[in-house]
Amino acid sequence: MIKLIAASRFTNEKGLDTYIEAVSKVSPDTKNKAEFYLAGEGETEAELIKLNTITNAGIKFLGSVKDIYDLLRTTHILVYPSRSKSEGFPAIITEAGATNNLVISSDFDGAGYVITGNEDGFIFKQNDADALRDKLKNAINNYADYKSKSLKFYNKIKDRFNIDTMIDKHMELYEQCLKK
Image (cartoon, rainbow, N blue to C red; front, side, top):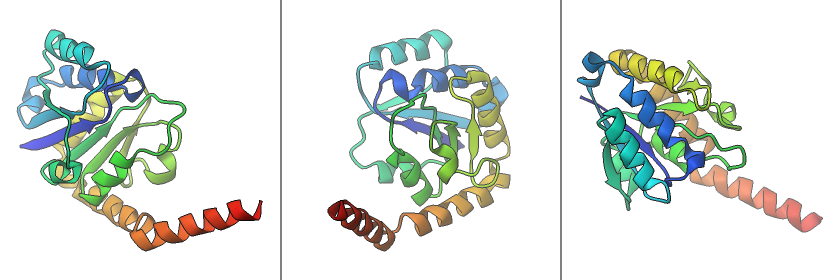
């Protein structure tokens, strides 16, 4: 069984309604091969639960998760449906990469700097539930064929976001700030 998850604060900017709508449009034969989860909490929680019920999406709400790494180690695919225009790069994508999850993300600003669509993950147009549905269907039905994509992304994350590199980059930033 392929386990898919979206995890974030429950706000409009996160696009979780797009995830629910897309899952509700996945055909029953594909849905039977997967389990869909949503982790988090926030201001739109009641609306999201209602949409999940009305559309019969069948997503299981997990609430707030204290250790996201433990959860991501049990899943196969992370879905990041953000519609934000102003947010920084989301930690959940690097966390998914570090746990070898295949990433399906909206084309939010900055996604293309880390995720190379069709090479080490999948990218869909923001707010496009039909495009996300197609990516979900493809990923579920062909998951075994995409293990190399998630491994490639894992290695990219491991290289770009390892602790030594991050410390060096922060030190460089601080030194530049001190020069100003």
